[in-house]
Length: 482
Image 1 (tube, helix red, strand yellow):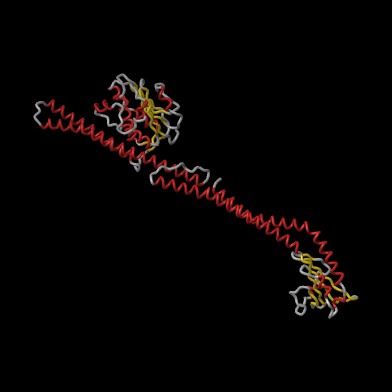
Image 2 (tube, rainbow, N blue to C red):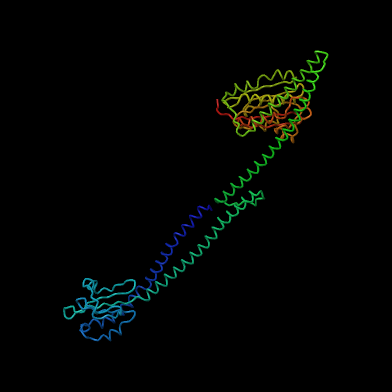
């Protein structure tokens, strides 16, 4: 149960408790009244008749009369008052009243004569005493309802006692539940936060379907995110250190070559052929270093969280048809057959310059790892229009997701499955010796490609089969159908 619901229910119970107690008391008194009503009425009426037989006598209202007989009729439970017709109190059994000082108002004295009235404390009866046709006085009898009052009082105290016991039990239960549902989980959560802040192991998280449970779940998610982010920072720091070390080593080799050939040029060289050869080596090594520094700069820029790539809206068929063109001469030069397919429709948001970098990186890798007379498929398609020449192991990577797929597939020796998860890491090269010797690879191409595509809101995957070849699949979201 949610804490909010639980608190509202508890509050409702506490609010209704006095009303329930009052209602139970009312029912108890009413039941007692129904039970005693007739019995008590008859008892008091019989008692009243005995008194009336004596006091309903004109002689009782004569001055100087002795009232010893009346004193025997009255007591703690019976009160008798004799009034003259003018309202003067002639006799009373109530010691709190004085016949000398008490005068009843006629309009009150003559009210409700001959009626046996009942209130909470007593039955009251008033009647005139006649002498002939004249009223000479009025007697008033009050019969106390002591047994009734005692019964009501006992039931009241019983209900109050039950109410107090129930209230104490309710308070104890609420205090226990508050400690269980609020204090205990909050203390546990505070200990976990303190333990996490002190870099200690965090005990199992509080799991309940309430607000504190949701708070604990959010804290645990935040904790895991922070741990993941910290681990990612450590990995990125390690990658940066490794990248700096690798690039320093890679730059050292061409710098050494440039220095050696520059010193040779500065010395005595006998032929123009040697001068041209050495100059070309220096230019090639310089270009390699420039290419490496350009890739390093772009990779660093793409790693910056605040870097926002400027995207423009383009028509898919026109843009990607242009993007896939101009690679056939290079493939013919390398003795590779290039198949180009573009069936893209709709509007897309891209950065043309960076998408050209992506294609150059992917085609450079495809050409580099294709055999003589090999085959490269370069395609920009929808998932519903797969090319016939696409290799079987690539098809599971192309789902029915809305958008376009940019596919670069080359035949030749593929990559081991254990290597695929590492190919997008910076400076990771499957064939390090061959790449280093070629003097053209920096190991950042696929990492840069991955980050550029992700900046476009897309994804990059690589599929490979050791016997048939390798394929890079890039997916980009569509923004408008045509």
